[in-house]
Image (cartoon, rainbow, N blue to C red; front, side, top):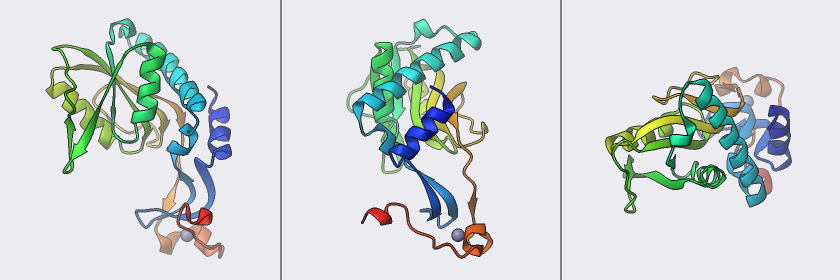
Length: 199
Ligand SMILES: [Zn+2]
């Protein structure tokens, strides 16, 4: 999938809003990303799943890894669930997830990993890489050989480290500002909380 095509689809589905926003961190930004909106229709989610599957297979081969040895796709809940499931479906692999319980990332629900099992980790958006990194660590603790990671969007400018090689369909650099230093505030544009225009 082409980057431009993905960004247009994000705009069409309101996954990517452009304007002047107050983020949950309190920082201001000219755009707001809610990737789940781009995956509302299973047909679209399936397309993203196939695109990641193809991209990650190519990337793993380029890294000298053997994608055909991967047995399982895993994702950190909640963001990675839909896209992880679709990538597993596209590759005809098993799908499991890790989730936070009282703030700690865990493997629950009776999911089992065999010693040395080759796993691919999938997330919707990587910003700092924190959730994916925790997911990778939990899987390794259970004996997994985590081979690679993949996401739809990389917002880290390539900087996020997750402990294994990773690839993304699209790079998106969205600057955010302290309200006192926000160029949009300076232009007198009203800042809104994302979603508020729909309520
Ligand atoms: Zn502002």
